[in-house]
Length: 378
Image 1 (cartoon, rainbow, N blue to C red):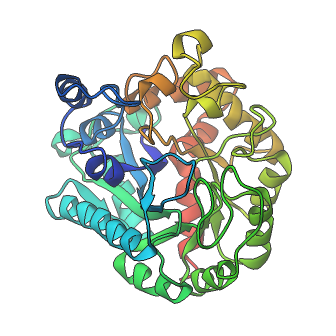
Image 2: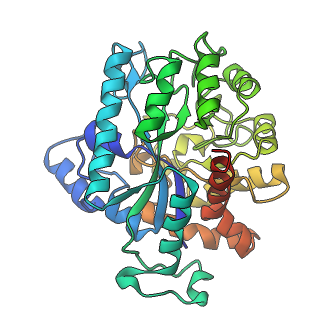
């Protein structure tokens, strides 16, 4: 069964972490260990293009991540001292995706016809171009790596590279389709994770420009007050690319039940993340060990199920793993070696009582419906 993953920091991994994502995961790990790299996340990554293909991750939202420096925050992702530098870095990441598009590894998806055609190609052919029969398409365990390129939709995590609200249009023309105004800490536009407060003065003009162009709003990482103000100010399509449930793991980074209900009312889809501190209560990053917590992929299903119970259906829950988002296997479910292990989720969902239609929606269909509706406004 094909998968749509709504959050992968691929260019950041390739450029800032200096990883050749064209290599198998095992080779990337070997090289980092051979080079003596022992920082958090090193030698234990989970994502590369061969693994995405092996796992049938046919479509993903790929990010631009270039953040301004803020004191007391993780320096690996908060590094630039001015917005102009952040903008230049983001354009460098964009160039990485463009290069992979040009050599046939990736397909850059910017509208519904392109997404529809891409998914149809993955659904109906496997390696060698052989047509799948209906029994294979209905069987979640049937995995046949396709020769189709991997498809991506471009997003910006933290709007620091957007020099002004008027700059949104330039980014749209460059191929950007989603913006999350804040990340960890504050951005020039909004309070984010770990802070309290609403939108800054440029925040509402940013949202107005996004709505005018059809740029999708990602509410992930918005502080609670910023979340409320953004939903009030922005009338366009919105999503939560990688967010879990605060009722299960209390933390401001997570969505409250009321926030989930507001998103459902707006026809949003919520991608469940696989960072274990978002799956396991009281996980302390850098201290809690994977072998002690024993967080498994089944825990991800708990968060998916919570969204479905609040919605009364399975139409708003999906996947947004954030794998290799500044961590590796040491902060991922203990029964996940690489992103290809997401292919075990359909059976887990069926075991929890979800029928094939619901499982298909969670694995990819809900995101496809969301983008069809969002892009029909353009």
